Amino acid sequence: MKDTMAIFRRIIGYIARISYIEWVKVEDVAQDMEVDIADLRLWLRLMESLGLVALMREPEMVVLRLMWLDFYGFDTSKLKDL
Image 1 (cartoon, rainbow, N blue to C red):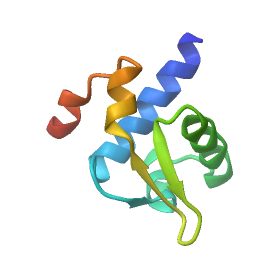
Image 2 (image 1 turned 135 degrees about the vertical axis):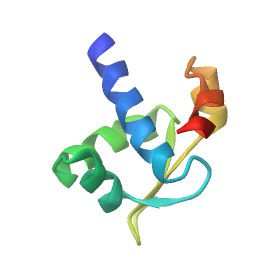
Image 3 (image 1 turned 90 degrees about the vertical axis):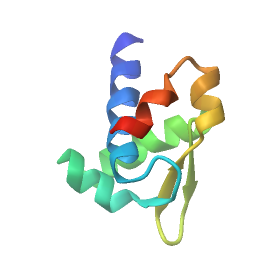
Image 4 (image 1 turned 30 degrees about the horizontal axis):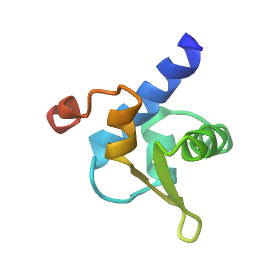
């Protein structure tokens, strides 16, 4: 479980670096993270099922759901500093 949370934190950090409140392209996040977009999509779908992010299919974009991140114990106050 610790590994999963570490991956979630990493993905959240990369999304937040682009924008912590606006929709960002999934492709841009994958490029910044230097990971395969298919792998990122899998993790984002898992995160979406928990309510941590919202996904838009066309165009493929993602946004952080700050309220749910707070609920699960992520410190969203630090996202503004990225």
